Amino acid sequence: MNNIELVALELQNKLLTQGFIVERLKSNKSNSIYLKIDYGVCYIVRVSDHKEHTAYSRCTYNIGDYIEEYSKIELDGFLKYFFPSDYVNLLVQNIIELRKKKIKKIGKKEYKKSGVTKSKLKSDSRWEMM
Image (cartoon, rainbow, N blue to C red):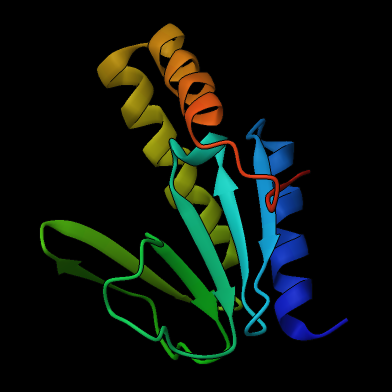
């Protein structure tokens, strides 16, 4: 198992332990692994060993060996977060906080409902449920 796979597995297991629904997709073109959190309600994490091909990737969270320090940037009104591969715990905490904020804003029932709605609208057989 390479380091990208190990980081993805560690992240996946920690999120599952916290009660998140995690779907996994392995890129066909690179070593990247994508983790969709709560059907995408808590966005997508990109685990990779290289920079994105475009700054406008749809992944909110990025983690990998190529990232030297934690940072966040705003692109077109959206925040993107970058974590070195040994910052898994900080990434998990960020995702937990995001879920708390969303639940506080819309309520637990609506949060779950929005995830189920997204799962039905964006059904894609390439994603593997963990």
